[in-house]
Length: 122
Image 1 (tube, helix red, strand yellow):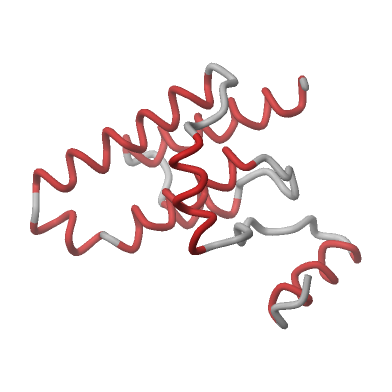
Image 2 (image 1 turned 45 degrees about the vertical axis):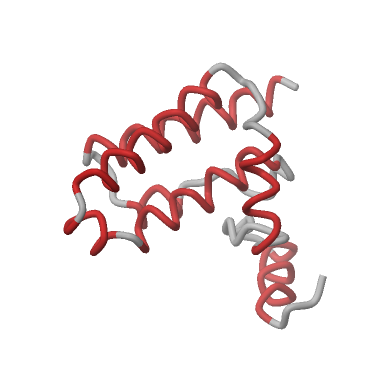
């Protein structure tokens, strides 16, 4: 349980750093905790990837940017408290992405997992 809470606090910090411009999304993604199996962390990962993918839209539509910033901030605050993200958020991402592409450990087992994911084999 302590590891789960620490991972969530760490991801919350990464999200905040992205929001204030201290980290790029790419840097934050590379620093996500490995293989946690935590659905809330996986949903936060997907939200962050979508944040990056919407860069053009964020530039053109200030209201969209503000809503998306508030959404990332809400995720960060929830994780910082060590709480699960709401089920509807987790289910929404799972509908399209059954598993997050969070990088695996940099060892032999992580390399095998990454390769199997690349081949779309579980």
